[in-house]
Length: 103
Image 1: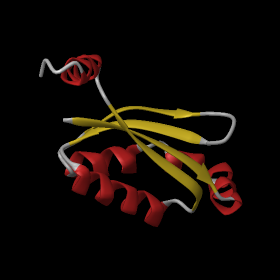
Image 2: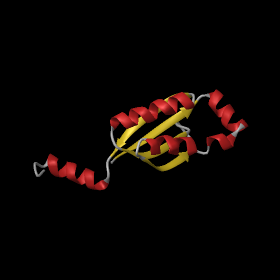
Image 3: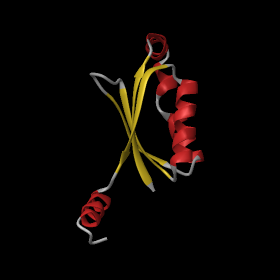
Image 4: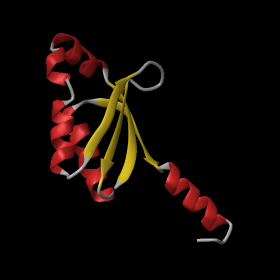
């Protein structure tokens, strides 16, 4: 299953909603959506800097990633979002071997 890192920045409106009602933003809705897509949430973190939050998840394919990011944008007003495809160490090593012509 593929791993993805989703980085998001919330709008001021979304931050205001989270401050007013933080219990609504415990991540359960995200876990529910990912679960319906036969995926799993590896972890979620709030952060400082360019992005406000990071989610690492496993999803079966790119169509599921599209469904997740669409749901995310429908639920949470975002000012910015970035998705990065992640490789496990084994996948990285296999890629290096292919680059050398051994795969």
